[in-house]
Amino acid sequence: MKTKTMLKKLKLSQNDFEEISEAVRKVESKTTGEIEAAITAESAHYAFWELLASVCISVLVFAVLLPFAGKISSVYERITWTQRIWALPALYGFVCFVSVSASFYLFNIPALDRIVIPRIVRTASVTRRAMRHFTESGIYETAEHSGILIFVSYLERQVRIVADRGISAKISPDLWKIISDELAADIKSGSAKTGFINAIEKCGDLLAQNFPAHEENPDELPDGLTVLEDAEWY
Image (cartoon, rainbow, N blue to C red; front, side, top):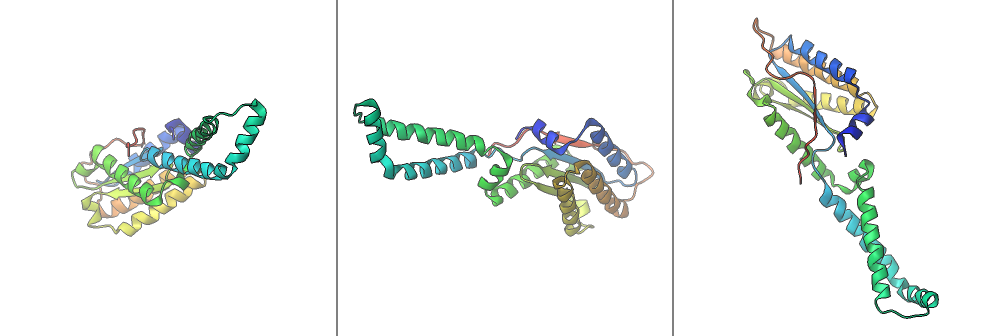
């Protein structure tokens, strides 16, 4: 899935991005914790699973056509008045090629993609991508190890909230699961901006309770919603 397609489906405008950034700034003014929000169209390229499903469809088409080989040959001979040994294999090969190509194209449609990609693969891919961004963005190296990543992967329809070790020692992971589920529900209902802002505010409330702001409270990470465009090739 392309990033532009994802943003169009989410209906996120530039003004929405600014409101999300302001929500992060407001929350972080009350805590030494840091919040990073990120979204990606998909957490991995699933070409292997799409191609595998397409080949399976092609095999099924071949199996359906096989019993009709005699009739197909007869029709060909009546039309052309000739008999070609290579004609039937060529026709079957062409049909299989077309079925693979058409199926591969169709399986790039998100709704069908989620069907052919095993859930365990999607879940693992989202987790890996979230942890990768957690590391690359520097969330893990804040002064008090109080950084949080709110990560959304659109194709897989999954949300991850990853907290640094300083937070994990004080706040139960069950609370992040509740916030994640609420954000996922908001995105599903078409309220992406509201969902992100609510998730940021709830995470901020938990951080403020456990990591209250000091007199000096530097902003260690960029604020706002980061759009990731580089999916993993696996």
